[in-house]
Image (cartoon, rainbow, N blue to C red; front, side):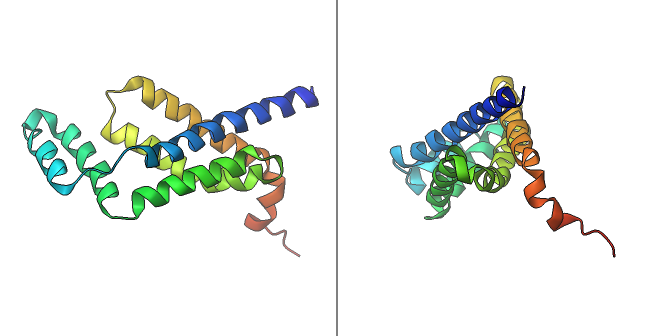
Length: 149
């Protein structure tokens, strides 16, 4: 049973790491839109019924227009995904990916709730990430709780 549990955790690390590596690479494949393209796209969603779409456009476009954040996020997803896939650094990768996975989940929860499939997908990825970190709790438990003398 211990060997099968180890295999399950390896598969979970490969799954989450692969998704993050693909997401990190994807951030560099598409050219960044110009500010005028963003304004035109945002102005086309000015109806009161479509405020969530406008919020999504402004959130993602704002991240891209900073000149560094979108690329930094891509590098972090790529690097942390690689750390997660590598056997010896899996715990560090899972720990560093946790805030990114949480942010992607919250994006889908609050800005894209109508996309149920993506929301469920990122709930599962967040759970996988949390399980991977908790699985290694013996490595970090002593940092949170010190036994009194």
